[in-house]
Amino acid sequence: MNDKQSEILLANPRGFCAGVERAIEIVERALQRFGAPIYVRHEVVHNKFVVDDLRNKGAVFVEELDEVPAGNTVIFSAHGVSLAVRQEAERRGLRVFDATCPLVTKVHIEVGRMREQGREIVMIGHKGHPEVEGTMGQVKTGIHLVETPDDVASLQVADPEKLAYVTQTTLSVDDTRAVIEALKRRFPTIVGPDTKDICYATQNRQQAVRELAKVVDVILVVGAPNSSNSNRLREIAEELGVRSYLLEDVTQLKDHWLENARVVGVTAGASAPDELVQELVKELVRRGGGEVSVMPGADENVRFRMPTELIDVPAVAAH
Image (spheres, rainbow, N blue to C red):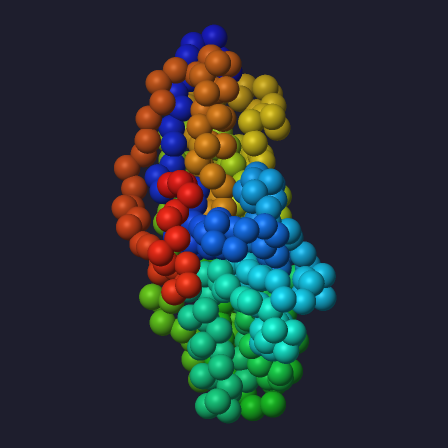
């Protein structure tokens, strides 16, 4: 940092969203109620710190259901799963708890409804992302993935008059604007979801980074390299002309990132625990940081309901 003390400014909101908190709590409550092992299909959220903590408590993370022994409990991650995965779990008689974010579930329902209306669906999202795979797996046919406006140009559909689109929830209005515009140019009658269906947490965290970028010299984003929303926060800061870096935890902090930074901005992806942010802030102070303050921002009071069987299990701790 500088010879002078640098100010440290925290984005607001940042870190855990309600869907992530619910998913982690489902795993912790299931462990309390049924004991270890509890199997979790895919990383429950994209954060190594969270996954390692749950693994230490007795969670076993698997990629496919055939890794779960018969008669055991399995939890579906916050990203959601395809119908085929649900059917396989049922066929094998596994006890299932669904930690899919309710905002993702809403998209799944929309996909089913649109197909029932005879529409083909265009999914805007990142290929290979578990949420995209889960959403596209809600129907057997008639769904297409696009990532860029160029993909729209090469899209082949059965009936251009009967189309709908949905988006990956961790993408914001700004992330998808160019693709949606390309879709509407090529298919003027395409219908889309209500803007209220967009993930509030994605929007709020991205807006907070935009506000942060107006007043800081560098932005540090705490988040996992495989976290879509964390990567996007870093990209937004960079697009706004502010040096920005993604780090999983404080051990990855580099001195040269902080060179000539009078004000250091800090935020975190929706799957990053606040304790990682606090450790980073402590280290920034140790390296010469001065006053720590929090930006004004949107209040988030969203809470999602626990599965019925886990409602009366006491929460382990507030996250």
